[in-house]
Image 1: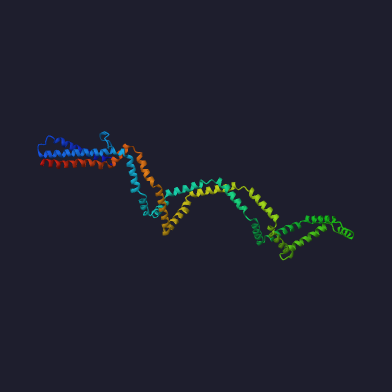
Image 2 (image 1 turned 120 degrees about the vertical axis):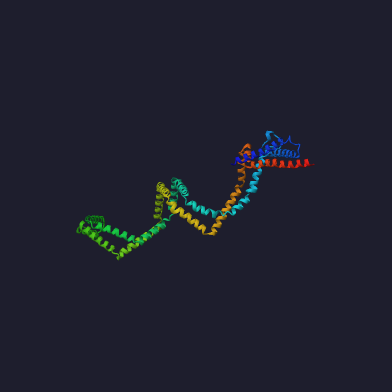
Length: 419
């Protein structure tokens, strides 16, 4: 349709010129009467007016009949000036920065975006895109590079721990839960089991006799010791010591026994005094540093991260992440914004500022874009495009020139005849 209308109007203009020309020729032999002379004058003036307007319209786009007459083909010759004027008008009048910013200030961008976001975020296409983006982000994490960093930070954190404070806390916990008494009872039970064995009596007797034999005394004491050795055999001495130790264990296992209480008190003092022993703490710190240094964590950390990455990816692909977390979070955020006019106003001000900055930085690109697109067209294409869009009105100029010339010619011829 857009190509037909200019063509039809062009044919109409040509037809009007042909009518004027035909009428002029047809009325040449019939000028004896006043009416025929007036009609001949009208056709003559219409032909001149039509030809003049045809020349004027054609001269805008090309040389009439291909003859390079001065001041014709105005559009191709002044193309740069026309493009520059068009760009200037577009930038400074039709789409000026001020007019764009003024229109956008009344656009209420945030209020219009909220319903769109609510609608689109629940659509399957958007859900799919968000899931794909999240999954891509999770899969793009290089766990092999992250693992050494985590290991480094973890070891750094372990080294920064106050070992003495940890030991003090551990000791107090052990004492609070009576692990010192439990440890003592365990040792006493084990000792009792050892004492109740048959071979223990012989071991004690044998050990005691060897100790006695090793003693070197003078005079009467040496004689008494020899007499004591002859009276006690290895078995009797062992049995005696076994009974003595068993009775001592029974007494110590009694919670009310003073020796037990004294022993436990000493144990607690020793436990609480561990951090005060510098040489012990130096050994503990050295052992801790060696253990941390030799502890290879990267492989295990990477294995854990890979497992987490796979589970996260599967969780995203299942859609549970979107339905249970992303959508509820987005909806809560939107509702909180809708219920808070101050927040909407702040967001609107922020959006307007960002749009203003965007317009300020990119406004000149509008004219450049138009200029670039126009420069892509050769003269013939540009002329054809303009003729297709404004050719109809230009062709009517030719029709109007012929018709107006005809009526003006009638008037002038009539005046000439009457005079």
